[in-house]
Image (cartoon, rainbow, N blue to C red):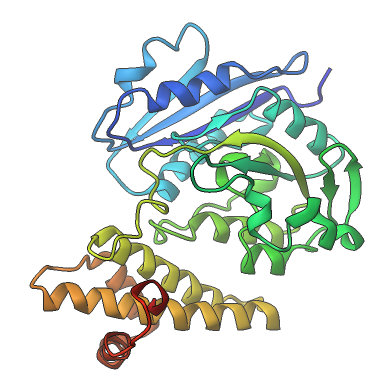
Length: 340
């Protein structure tokens, strides 16, 4: 019998198409759980154009569901609402995150429980996104080859996968400079979260990585599995859908990437690796953000100002930096895909 009795599943919901939430809940209901383990699903309707209630009625008989409804505040704020409710409930041992357009494979929670049962606080696994990547881990050198590059810094928790475990703070630099874990693969020991929450300022990018970094810096012990236990979907994904140069969502994503770098640069604990990464990311993001922001103005389209106002708190001279960066991209003769 597992030492963990209840898993809280956090699903922020903002979708336009029917059936996406039901597909995600189907994956939750299909979990093959250890004896004595129960799931409670916290669905946060984040001002969704298609209300979550339109898809929940058929699931109450199969799943324990808590619905939280709020005005749109982004995925970080939605997850925070669920974490606050979980803390108030006081009977959740593990917290698992699931974006509403993703689907868990049946062994996901059982595999997470097995790994966390070895004393770890943070678990994540490999995943696939049909049409985008065949294997998440092969996109990042630090994860490639079953984590061969991490072998000397880890212990093998389970050779099948494999599943590797890391000492506290061993992966802090890696979490900051590389995307080690997709949110829908992460399962946390509830006691490790404490007062930590997602940064709501990072609405379109970086809120998850910043949260994982804060957990790692707080001493969370990390276990990474190379088993593929999640399939990522193509619903309203704020990152993958925000790459159109003409879309305000792209401007916001790049602004949030710049904001992530600015916040990381000002963090009280900053190694040379994290500083160098943050400077490089800030430089690239500032150039791309400035070009697309001013490009909208030149085309007489109002750019989104929410992230822009937040950036001014970190860089009051940003409006003066933007025109030269805009011209630099405009005069760049490389193909469009290489200029940003």
